[in-house]
Image (cartoon, rainbow, N blue to C red; front, side, top):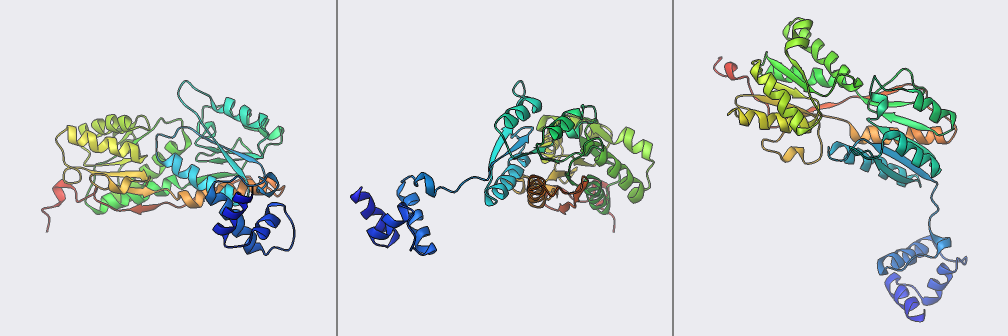
Length: 344
């Protein structure tokens, strides 16, 4: 024990008596000195005495659909850091194919007495899902916030990016480069963000290029899966329909779009332009660096935490949707349309 006191005192630059006072919770030690001693404990690998550990304000569950798409870990990191700063302990629960469902994860978190739950791209985004599960959760008195996907049937705060505006940004950019055959590759139609992206895309194609809405939706929109392979399959179909540019509903799909173009012997962006959505970590370092619509992840994650803590604190936010504006990040995967380069 004496050796340990001497080590800690030397590390913190204080006397052994001061270390003893801090460890025993005695008064008369300056806050900065107390912090130095606690930091020395951490550095030397000693556990802090139980009474000196910061008490957690409680557990908060974070349910995400998967972690393969880098946008979900990015959002989880922002939310986790914001919760930790407020004294809460984040518990990450991830759905996996053949593994736990959202309902099972919710039950597990509720059984552990979580203070609240944040859902990211959950069943609330699926227009075919039963929204009664969220009303039951509310009846149990568990505060929750829903990210990505809005339902008027659920009385809760929602945090969303402006999917319609995102499509306007992408289409306007590509049209300014001379593209007129622009395709949209996205996930299954039952999801709210997908429906909103289609609305924004069709309207932008009408406003920017004067195209007929029905023609756009029938010929230039291709549903697939939110995966690299899904983006690849959708882009193959859009290339066959003469598209010289493809807007993808996720960066993962956009990587699949680039792969599809190369399989067809096409160069990105010389022969076909590709735009992603999310601006996931590392996406700036792909080949070519991906032009994408950046989802405002830091703002959305912090808003989700702030809103949940208001719910936990008994001053709930209005049961409405908080919509965050995305931004276009132009990199190397978009260029002038092939037939547009020879114009004066």
